[in-house]
Image (cartoon, rainbow, N blue to C red):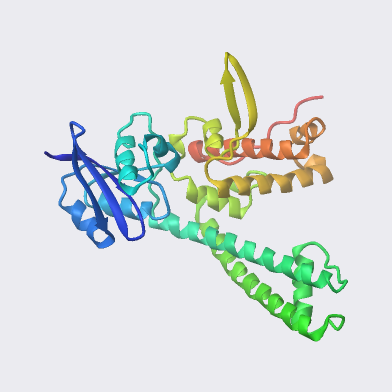
Length: 342
């Protein structure tokens, strides 16, 4: 019996394989160690291989593709309904094997090594920003215990960190000053790493045409533009801008029963990082709209008069995702809407 479809459940060391023939009969059900995966698939004839999309799935997809197999990555949430009974590696592999053959299944494009390298910059930057925020909040809390209030904003935090590192904080007891100085030194080291990473992102942005075109959208900076350009490798697989926005979790949840349709909050499904970048960018744009309404799309200030700020922010992120999809699929740059006559 010739194997036609294989489902593989990835892990750190032990991988579970479930293979069937053209009639759907189970041919192989076994566990493989990491070093055995490539030799096992090298002996198989060309077949369809299903894998759940995860951190290491793109690497294995590239390796198995080199061996001549057709590899398809699937979101884990779409594979879950095919799992029977208990949660085991064998059941997961069987569910993957079944799910990959479904005609309505949605698949994740395989990322190249260049894309993953650029995404590594984003992930590292995101981690360092979180660490910097934690250090700043820790210093703010410690200083508050001595009656010292630290002004809000990163600039003030970095200035105070420099003062503490230089020993210019006589109002703090020596022991506490040594503790806070150590935290301040860590902030300085993290800031140096962030500066280097942002220079790498800027260099990548200047060499990528798509990223430069995405950066023409109001509220989309270098970080958001590079993240979109790297993460969305096949924008044409989305039929419309709304479908792309839905994939980022920026569209309302639908609750339809008895012919009545109700829209709830946004689904928050899909890529959290891209969704957060778009919302943060639109938050900055909303602040600019409040300060200088004439510098933004006139529809934005008008919407702020009727809706809460947070609702407008998410709606603007939704619209920006659709504009980004249009630029990625049709080319060109952002064109501001023509002003309507009064």
